[in-house]
Image (tube, rainbow, N blue to C red; front, side, top):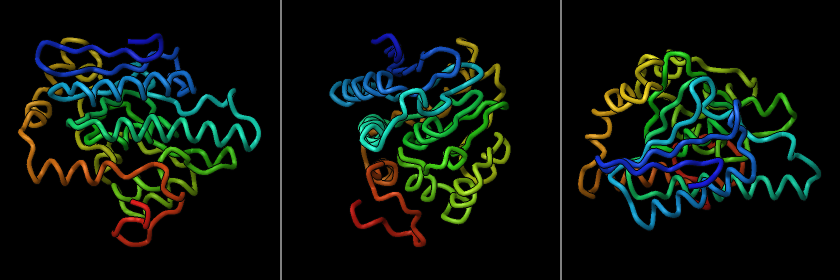
Length: 235
């Protein structure tokens, strides 16, 4: 579809969205713009299900820090993340993140905006923004807490600690763990995702609506971690 985000609509009804911004898949403003456009197209003409993936070693390494600047620039970057990740969260089909390697910062937040996360054995998740003196700005303060609980989310964000695949599965950050080869190899990827994609092609109903309601928490919510299970005031 674009230079930085590819979209393949397969014959089986599955659309594969691939990030392709160099070795580290930095989430630049240009990439986020293409991702928002791709998500809008998938919303307007929905496939059966969607898979979001990146490189074999790095799913997405987070924001492109070379674009950082003053407060006005920070607001523009944050708005770009909100627009792109909220657009992914709004796709009216089951969206699966196939995570191989590192999903850090905005990369982790992109995985959180999906319904389901399949991790390769070498997958690593984290919100290391604190190491740069900032907080997660792409929805991590909201979606991570809702997925793994406020206490674990606070610990990850305050320390910047990275979580490997097995721990991610144990705490609920990943939903399924597969071999790296099974996730990344073009033919094997289809087999490893087959069972999940099969469940994704159900007709609309209460269960699906509930899943979308939990995923589609706007990233523009105030960046505070809830201490209760109820939604924040603006959601």
